[in-house]
Length: 309
Image (tube, rainbow, N blue to C red):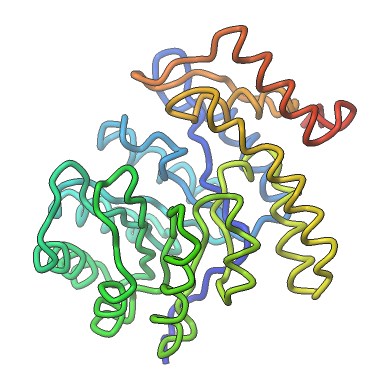
């Protein structure tokens, strides 16, 4: 029996709010964290893709992690993304996350080099052997270039009980289905999260545990409604919320990386944050800002966009 804490529900991959000098903007981060906690999300994931970890120095990653754990102060479980292409650096960041009191880490597989299965297994093995804390794998083959197959994940979970879940950022629903059937059959506490927003309801219906959706930064009510309705077996309400959420997903096509869109959506909703980015990401043009506002209005209703938080 796995004695580690089980994560579930809606866990936003929290945007990192920065100033014009690409330093942490603490006031804006506080505003966003408080907004999300008051929105009744089930946890907070810092330094994921939407948190711009890949553009950050190690020192900035540590500063964001320290600030997040300290400011959340036990109000919700805090997950910290610690993955890098280097095993040694990932271990260092993971140990730091444990030392500062994070509730768990999220580890994406190394990007740039494709690895043999043995080398990939040993990468994760070294991390979880050194850092005994709840660990979620992060499967995002579109960005890493390498998939974590259900059979591979099962092999890891069989060997290391501190691997407690996975974020499945994959297009194919069949992949998530096989992950659930393959791993949860013998490890029912293993948590499977959808990484893509529109796979949340599918993931729950297949026996998964939650979602880590970018839109939950600025419209958490939609994902929360899906989760609560599903758990209450109010499937009609869950489907209605899913349809509303689906109306937001064209936001992801406005700019690449999409993190600029999320920050603009936060600002449009009245959450007091800066929209500065870490280069090479850039703030949106005026035309793209108008597109964000239009899509938000269509999905949420014009009168509901601004919440003045």
